[in-house]
Amino acid sequence: MRRNLFILTGILLLALPQFLFAQSRTVAVLTPFLAQPGTQLMVEGFEAAAKSKGWQVDVIDTSGDVAALVSRMEDVALQKVDVMVINVDPSQIRNGLLAAKDAGIPVFGMDSGADPLLTANVTSNGYVMAAETATYVVDQLNGKGNVVMFIFEPYPPVQKRGAIAESIFNNEPDIKIMEKITPSFDRGPLEGARNAMEAVLTANPAKGSIQAVWAAWDDPALGAEQAIRDAGREDEGIVIVGIDATEQARDRIAARGNLKATVAQDFNGIANTVANTVEQYLKSGSVSRSQIYVSAKLVTADDL
Amino acid sequence: MTGSLQLASLLRRYGTFLGFLLIVSFFWSQRPDTFMTTRNWLNITQQVSILCVISFTMTLVMVGGDFDLSVGSMASLSGMIAAVLWQQDVSLFGALGTALLVGAFGGVLNGVLVAYAGLSAFVATLGTLTIFSGLALLVSEGKTIFGRAIPEIVGDFSRGGIPLAEGIQLPNLTLIAISILILMGIVLQHTVFGRNLHAVGGNREASLLAGVPVARLRLIAFAVNSVGAAIAGLMLVSRLSSANPTQGDGLMLNAIASVFVGMTMSEEGEPNLFGTLTGVLILGVLSNGLTQLRIDTYVQQILTGLIIIVAVLFSRLSLRRR
Image 1 (spheres, each protein chain N blue to C red):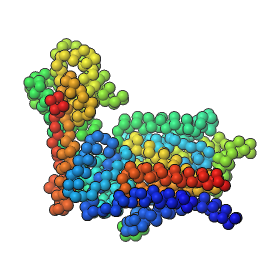
Image 2 (image 1 turned 45 degrees about the vertical axis):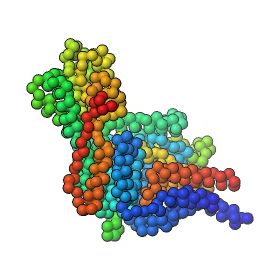
Image 3 (image 1 turned 30 degrees about the vertical axis):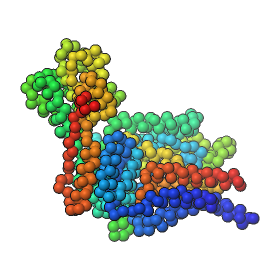
């Protein structure tokens, strides 16, 4: 037994040096999504920015477990860190936000949603992202042609994108929205979009009957591109655009096929803006805006 | 000689508990201002309450010599069913009751497959794990349900409790865990069912020959455990004010780990509630304390795993030496 205790103590002592270097400003970054590439980029960007400002950053990742994230928020609230930065949907961690509020600790969202319990949230503007790709389509078509839209109404951030793109297309007299499709999720949106696009292609067999496919995110754009290739209609010059700039979408854009553009969130810009907003808050005790947008960037083959 | 043997036996029985106390003292010494406070301990009890409920009822199944891999996905499923029903304007208690019924039904299914159809608990509950998990995704269409769909009182419940002092309350979720602990304690120690279940777990053949209704007892244990998982799932919905089709999945491994750690605290290596409680508390205190000490979360995971192995390994070695 003594050996048992000895081993336990040893293990714990090994970890000791990590917390002997406490500094004045401590920021806890909490997320269940550190395995996601976007989150990773933001957290790394924030750590770099914080380092230059001389803050101590603790990154806490609960590997997908949102309940554990609430627990860890309660822990760091009790530990009286100066600031919490979260990357998670605030509506799911209300208990954690309230624990922070009780402890008087400001919480900043890094690409989370808006919430009254957050001091500020920094994110990309979904409306602007959709406008970027929709105007790209209008420009490529010289303001004339038939467009197939892939939308998703049930999820508010994606619904926004569809609404903006639709009004841009409707504002162009010679652009016609020929279909608005919500892809089936049964076997993933890529497969769902692909099947739907196959049906559209079959219903419109004439060459040049479709000029563009606008997708509210990358998966349906990729699915539509596959359907067009499988139907042997890749040479008709159908322009496809997506949003989010996933790895797969970048690959296809770089291959210079029908998928022409997507929009990348500026994760590093978001991280830096969070750090600057936190700094402003620590200095003045307030922030100028509670919802702060960072521009996203259109990605085409020339950027890859 | 007898004296030292007794001491060895005591250490064997309470070694894990001593280890727990050692961990607590260590955190106490490192974070004297925040760790050993009523506030923090009430936080810890609330943080482990959901795992507690699932682990306590899992102890019942494991006392009977079985185990159940499907509890985590049952927790996800029950929470999801309640949330979907609320979304469709079913009453608060109508949805809660349905979720618990689904739990009971799932447990009976496990029990029939294992105790009557003769499948191994591993295979049967691995199968139902996948089924429950698929059902949770199916009823939710893979989406998280949050916001107005979840009745306000559900989220408020996990923030409420019995006031103890100014700004300090015994959380409702902790109260549920304590109630289940007491209930399971009575069932296991003070009922014929509990005593027979111990016999079944100790020696199934002998129990059968002695006229114990082995299959029925095992089925009941599975049913109770699954209802426990359903309760845990509903607690999770309350704590998160939202339901996600996979949010309970992680509970299963931690529950089994807690019972295993607890088994080191019995002379015969049997599952027991006090041991399970210690196991859960070790996991909870480690997460809480290591976060307060600002240890990297991945290092935390490794330390937690090591400590579980060390505890079980040590009790194995000392059993063999006997």
